[in-house]
Length: 219
Length: 116
Image (cartoon, rainbow over all chains, first blue to last red; front, side):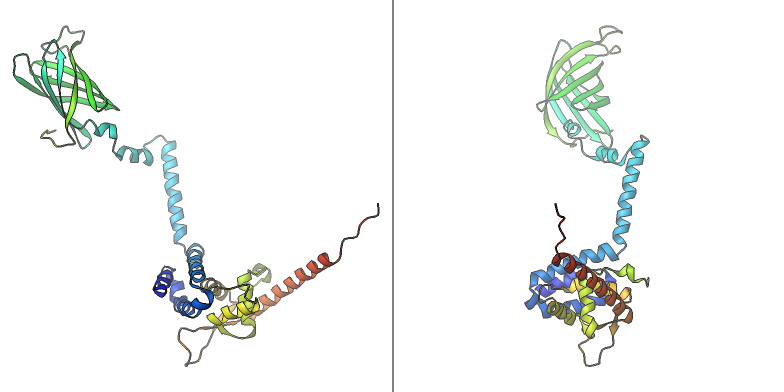
């Protein structure tokens, strides 16, 4: 067992050293393990392993040069104001705030305009967010429209939607796992008050009923 | 390369290995045993340290591999001191003699005190 382990340590040495001395070292290990003790022989072989790679092998110099080059690259890109590798990594990392918006939300709107159940589905496909709003109009029919110009900034969600004759903007914020938001009519919609002002359609709270990207929405 | 001064002072491991080979050619395990004997068991050389140093000493031309007889275990290789290695060892011993002489001089003779 210890012999096999010692052979493994020898095998980790640089090839040139291993070819030349491994057989002799193994023979000495067999001869000296009783008089010297197993632990000192293993300690000695590990130190030899480190010395061999550090002093006699150019591989660590190549690795060190590579790391130095990478640091220079990061530093240089930071100086010229371009996207640094660190920033690139940060952009690739999942943003928990963004992922919390993904899914189907259901809730109701308290308003003097269209009222009743409103369902919002929003998912991320690639780099773009897509969404759909379904609401019950005052005619009792369900109207739906795609969410456009979706913008997410931290816990804040903003989008525009055309559902039925209404052209509205939504502005909401995540609070304690719920989405609280306000619908406002824009100037071009049927329920708009005037061309120069927005009219609050209503406000409500939405619960997430199905998270993730399980949706039939198409971009 | 052949300047003696660039080799001195020798590390303890190198000094002991060269000393072990000064009398006769030995295989690796023989060198380890001889080093332990010379130092009265105070300095035990492991095989890793031994062959690290032997590799360096052979590259520097201080130690050479000796011919072995056909009856020997093929895993045993014998090493011997080259004439260049002997010169280096002699120079190191002279240096150490000087160090010991100076040490004795300073340790035995107390410095004279000035009369107040």
